[in-house]
Length: 231
Ligand SMILES: Nc1ncnc2c1ncn2[C@@H]1O[C@H](COP(=O)(O)OP(=O)(O)OP(=O)(O)O)[C@@H](O)[C@H]1O
Image (cartoon, rainbow, N blue to C red; front, side):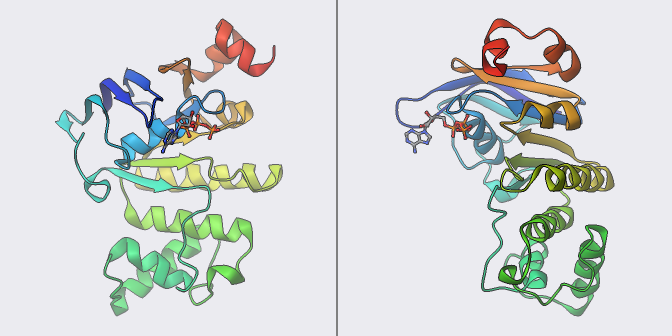
């Protein structure tokens, strides 16, 4: 269980607070107006942004000051963060060995992960030889190999068309189910939350509120969410 205890985060003069617990929530969307602090919140959970105050706990153990690689979090960014000079297999290999040294048995594991996300046989391509959707799939295969208990996604498919985005959300669900991971996903699109996440955190006016049951939240939105949704 992930707990954010009296957490205060932010850069410059900006601050956002969070005091919430994700319990057994499996798929959680993080929504809110632009600049509200959604990415800041996800970055703090993943360990890229030290908090000004408060604690982060995972299954009762404090991880507030742990380095990103030591946390139970695998992060997927919008640009998917594949190294352009490395092949798909080499990029995925970094999830297994950060020093980049691959063993023969790794190749089988990598090929199996690629097959699971629909990229069988693409081990030796470089990212420049993949479509946007294929790059997203390769990045998801890397998350699959990292096999961390929390998948953190920051607007991962914003650059993809609507149909492809729906398809990729299905792949995310499949990968998360396979490794038994919770998913935390920042999105601008309320439909993503409704389609994908059973629970939703709403970030606005300096605080992260929730998690709320997504269906209840959208069927009877509080004033601030109503304004955000333009209702
Ligand atoms: N390095 C920084 N220095 C100063 N302010 C920053 C820095 N990084 C982010 N901010 C500010 O923090 C606030 C929150 O940014 P954040 O990216 O978390 O918002 P967001 O809700 O994810 O927005 P968006 O939906 O537009 O991506 C913004 O006002 C932003 O300008």
